[in-house]
Length: 398
Image (tube, rainbow, N blue to C red; front, side):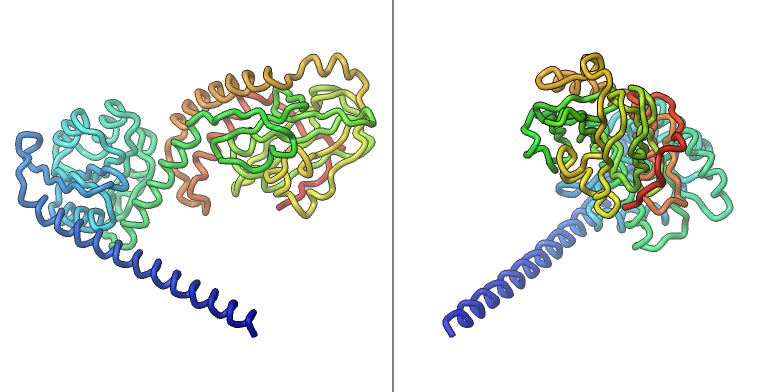
């Protein structure tokens, strides 16, 4: 009886707590929307002719992003302001490309939304100008049904996506939210991770911006790791750096037991992310493959959750252990090496992102472009071209 009373009390407290939290969240959302509406009403009455003749500016507290929209149709700009301000964005609007470029020189924006067809300077010239002046600003194209091909062409000059008009409120908010998520993802990828030396048992999942380096584990230039077991075999796996750099492993091609490899031969292959991009990894040791980890057949996530323990890939009976280990790094040397590797990868990723700015709108994966760029950057930095030999097994999918 006492147990039931205690249980009932706990349930009641949980329900009350949940109700209070939901109510508070709703009150905060209502207050924020009211404050944004007030900011919208005030902003439209202010004059900014000293910056740009047609400029209308609405500031909000803690904006999700700062957007500059340019279109020669005032009604379109009115829609942008109302929808995006109420959704939590700070918005500047102007009616000409020349004014937009003038503002880009003076202000910090996260995004520029530009119409394609405008008198004087068209949207393509605006995109080129913004990309030249401030390559850190993401450019989105506002386009009608008849100019979609031109919008796609604009992506060659720095535009990252396009939105069709006329658009609904939900469509525009979804579009803006998608752009924010992509920008955040790209910035996170371009931030070098913190490197920590830990014990193997504590080298599981950490912050996405923290790479764990376990003591007692050797690491290869291709970011596979080796731990020498009591039997003399070398246990091989994939280090923490890989998945935090390029994304989750969705499939793996395991080596076949009994296969003899030389250091540098193709050993296993990974498919990365939703687009299934494949990366090939070489053997860190010369010898014969003895065991493979068939737990990965049904628990591929072990490579992410416990990369240095249950997430191992195979064991190798080494033939030239002393010589091979001399080409790997361990301990404090590995930490310094990882720091240099992270800087190298970030520099290469910056180049790859610049080479592929456009978003694949047909992909169901919103960050597919950044992930493709990360895979290319990783392969160019750390992997050598390799073909999957016939002795590598079929792909095991997550």
